[in-house]
Image 1 (cartoon, rainbow, N blue to C red):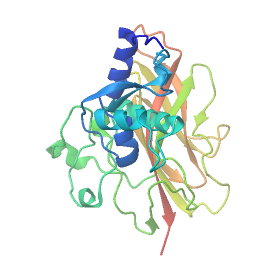
Image 2 (image 1 turned 135 degrees about the vertical axis):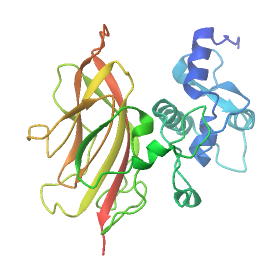
Image 3 (image 1 turned 180 degrees about the vertical axis):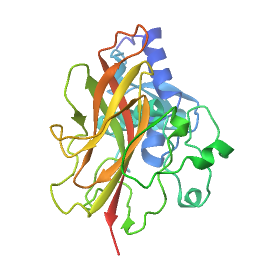
Length: 272
């Protein structure tokens, strides 16, 4: 079968979105280090050079993915595509890598940005602590969004679990359109009673610095609530509320009619 070369545009798209990070290394081990690798055809059809069929893999995982083994279950195409999706979201959001328990004990670490090494916070960062009052807050940059607290009195938190100890993604994206109503997170687990059972915290940013985003903590899109506008922000609320977003407008001559909002989420459950 004749191999069709991957076009330069498609190669650039894969390399830029992955920043030469292997999605299998990230998916299996959370490894975001720079790798030597190749662009793999996920359906193993070298004639299919569609970007959805391409992924940057390190040399080891490319060999393993293309190879066949009878000794263990091989990685499946859908599995690798999910790893790739999560990697692209992580890099695009430039949110911190999930810290290890040892890192939790080290105060003053900035969120890890793509292409930057961790540094100790400057003096200005010492004031960037999570506010006690619930509601909406706006920041001037990603660096000025406070990191989540390690402890909240009267509550406990487990990564990947919601108020009710059920699985819920801790990061993702939400797309908002000009002229549309308030947009919440998919299947957000808020309720209408027992409002002291939990607390949520969310850090977010607009993918386009020329598009302003309205943020609000409210029970539903029809409920009343306060609003803050910006490109970077953070919010917190009770388990009876949810974070919501709305297209706010554009700066200068930008004609965008939609924007993606990247977010990182943390739930707290009531505890003794």
